[in-house]
Length: 348
Ligand SMILES: NC(=O)c1ccc[n+]([C@@H]2O[C@H](COP(=O)([O-])OP(=O)(O)OC[C@H]3O[C@@H](n4cnc5c(N)ncnc54)[C@H](O)[C@@H]3O)[C@@H](O)[C@H]2O)c1
Image (cartoon, rainbow, N blue to C red; front, side, top):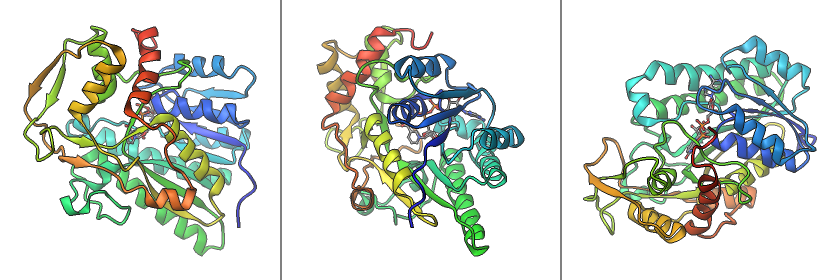
């Protein structure tokens, strides 16, 4: 049985890249939005930009940590929240190896805190940002990756995200056994790229390690050059192949999941396009879009980088009737370039 349509949505990590795009999409589709973010990696200016882009919408902002369970509970109760979309996390694979406890504390501990607050406030719907990093290094025969692919993460980032998925599943089971309702979707994103097509908000990770913004920053002269990490992989041009999904399409997948969840549902879905592009292909697409060469150097492989990660999107297409609307890399990159070239210092 479907829930009553959710209207009041709490977005954790809503001052970050994906969360700000989701907050804007929700606001523009008539939802009331409460953003929770401690701005450790996000920007209060991103929230300002979301508000400016959706001036007639209700967008509240609470600058707190998701680990603050009591405060979260109050926000959910006072805001009569219907559902949560949980983006807040630390999200650098390399950093997770150096600072594992921070990753377990934020990515697992933050999720446990959120579940506790949801239980206290009676909130029964959750969309969780998971990741293809939970699959680790899949066998070549398992690509494109289905949701049933064994999850063997190889770093603390992926491990804490997988543990959070399992904690959510156990929590749901206990509620269902007690006769209550709880529904969730764990969306396992592949590589997210692009920006709002009108250029009102964008991507400003600090430090920036994602491929597309790194290419664009190199073109803008905000970094010396892009390092191509490994060109001897068993792929067509020797560089790693990834599945790049546009942030606008990703937000549509969240919206579809939010409104499709029935009262006791559990969905685990890959969000990717099913198409792979190599690092060199992305670099060339950036050059095409921007009309400038990307200053680049060739470096050695980065430990733990699988040669190829591409999703099988059949499940999300079947269950949510979702498929990407942005057809080409160039389209996503030109959206990212629109914001970045107008905001060479990001959010300042
Ligand atoms: N960007 C990608 O390609 C990608 C791919 C797979 C999964 N994901 C997941 O998507 C989510 C969003 O990623 P993003 O690229 O927008 O990252 P981001 O760093 O831009 O956003 C994360 C936000 O969470 C906030 N945050 C961190 N710790 C917090 C805490 N304790 N309390 C409150 N807020 C906190 C940060 O300040 C930041 O604004 C993350 O969960 C990430 O693991 C991203």
